[in-house]
Image 1: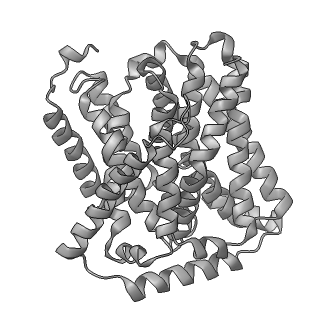
Image 2 (image 1 turned 90 degrees about the horizontal axis):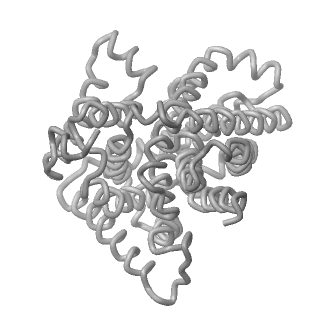
Length: 399
C-alpha cells in the first residue's frame, strides 16, 4: 500500500490512532465477561499491539512509513526501557536458582546459534541484506520488542527486510506462545517424568509478593513527574553520552547501539539505589506504556501482503525456533528442571517482558512476577546476545 494512499497521514493523527488501539484493547481485556476473559487469555493484548496496526497498514488506514515511527524508536522506546531496567529486582532473579537461569541461557544460546544456521540454510533464497533482519529478529527473540528496536537501529534494517521480519516474529513467535500455553495442562506429567522440583518457584513467588504488598504506594503527581523525568531526561542524557567522541563507533556499535547498551547497564546499576523505589509507584507500568506504543509502530511498518513475496523468512523463522526448542528442552532434561522454567525461560527469550508473565500466569496463576523476571533477564542479555547473533549472520556472507 502506497503511503500517499493511506487514510491517516498526519503523525499526530497516527499517534492518536495507535494509542486508541492500545487503550481499547487493554480496556476490553479488563471487562468482566466470560467470553472476553477466555479470548484474551489465549490471544493476549500483546498480540493485538502487532496485528491491529499491521492490519491497519495492510488495509490502507495508516502508512507503512512515517516520521512518528522514528520518534517512537528514538525517544519513547529508550525511556520505557530505562524505566524497566531501574525496576529490576536483581536479587530476586538470582534466588530463582541456577536451574532457571541455565535453562533460560540454553534458550538464548539456541537463538544465537540457531539464527546464523537458519540464515545459512536459506541464504540462497533470501535478499542480500537479510542478515540485518536476522539481527533485528534476534533482538526480539532475546528479550522482546524493546531489544528488537535497539537492533533495528544497530543493524540499520531496511524497510523491505523489516516488514517480513516483523511478520515472522509475529506469526512464528506468537504461535510458539500458543503451544507453550497449551503445554501448561501437561506440566505435572512432564515434571514427574523429568524428576523436577517446584520448591524454588514457590519460595521466589512468596518473596516477590511480600515485597510488592509491603511497599506498593498510590501514584501521585510528584512521583509521576519523577518517573517521567528519569525515563525521558535519563534516556536522552544517555543518548548524548553514547554520541560522545570517546565512545568507539563502528557500523554495528553505533550511537543507537551504545544508547541501549548504556541504558541496560546504567538502569541495572540504578536498580540497586533508591531510584528503584519509583517502581513502588508504578515506574515499570509507565515503562510498558512506552514499549507498547513502540510495538504498535513496529506493527504498523509491516504489511501482510508482503508475506506472499517473502515466505522464505517464515521458513527461516521456523527452523530457527526449532533449534531454540531443542536447546531449551535438552537443558531442562539434563538439569531435571520443571516445565515452568522451560516456559518462562523460552518466553523470557522469545517474548520478553510482555508475554513471559502471561505464560507464567497460565502455568502458575500466582507466579506472573517470575515470568517478568525472566523477561527482564532477557532484556539484560538481549542487546549483547543479539549483536553477536547478527554479527555471526553477517560473517556468513563474508561481510
